[in-house]
Length: 159
Image (cartoon, rainbow, N blue to C red; front, side, top):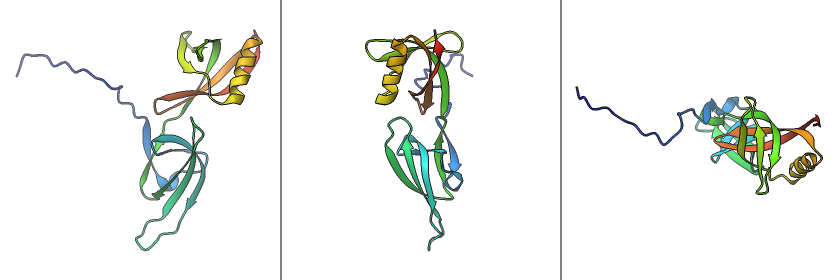
């Protein structure tokens, strides 16, 4: 046995998977699926009959949960598809900086300062107007596959 110690430098995360496999035939409308390496919400599923070579095919139409782009994919129903781990977390809005970042209060009392304002104009104006009026705002942040974005807003009354 050697006496030297081995040091490993890890340049990746802890290995928690960003997706999990699920059989294509079991994915339903309003579920999530990865299409072209983007997390998508399934808006339409159609299944073709088994053909000459024995595979029924599932045709998925999904909308990217971050960019709202429409993506499509066709997968044999017996094959596995990647399904993203999608989490929604609510944070209280503390501040909006000049450069478009928001400061949020987490459940354990820390601040989270690495999120940009949403690109959706309607949501953006609601957040800015509500913040300017001094309302207590709670934003819902959706995270999947290493990306995070503000996706909804709740008003919990005046400060």
